[in-house]
Image (cartoon, rainbow, N blue to C red; front, side, top):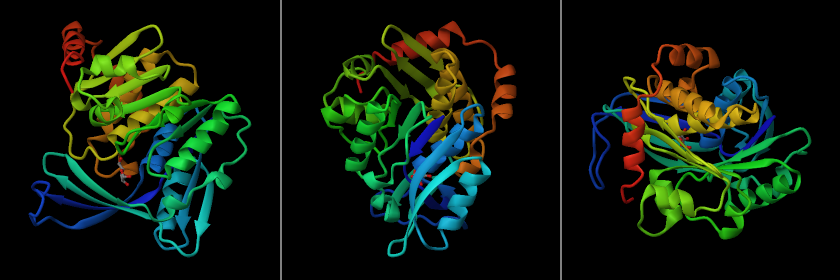
Length: 311
Ligand code: RIB
């Protein structure tokens, strides 16, 4: 059983020809809203992956935005431990999605900033705690400490990018980052391979966008090349990856299989608009994977070479 502790945001999304440069105004198209937030997106992905019962502890305002956020999680089968606050708005995110599927996101944390140590539910029955960095760092540290003490595996998606204290890193069993986040954690310049080796966590996974993902376990490296899809919106792809990966590991699947499923689900999520709305169900991921050839040795070699590039 997986417990996700993290943010829920209502995403206000505008598609535009390109993401504006600093100081630039770009004319976009209609605004749309989608349930989002890294924590909630990952909880939905974990639940839709099937096989791992998923709960989420989150904070919301008592406002109109809270309803679609709760409904999306519950529709996916996530059991909620929701704290609701009268005097603060639910989290929101303002997202520009460009016609080449990239995004730029600004988050107004609102109630997410109120999630605190008092809100952690009883940990009995859970195997994994999955967190991100859109809730207070003090809460992340407190939850990680208590989860470790209770024998859970602590998984952290260190997003949005920031440096982490050695005390927190020492509590994390599974660290999931993208290239920018890996760079922020590594601090100094070096290669991806060196940064992966230097981090103290038992398992470190770096997602590399359309290139795929690489995992550094305690005894081995696993290289998973990306899957080619026609991407229209990459929002939430990293969250889909994290949720599916932890769902797979919680069911004791092998790391290579978990990485392949997570990568396939993330690729599929890029073919639909929005964050939670784009997270695929397990059957869609299974049929997608059936149609894929086994990983090409040349693609794996290219990924190994990419890990030798300085970041
Ligand atoms: O990772 C994508 C998410 O980041 C969006 O859903 C947005 O809410 C922000 O949290």
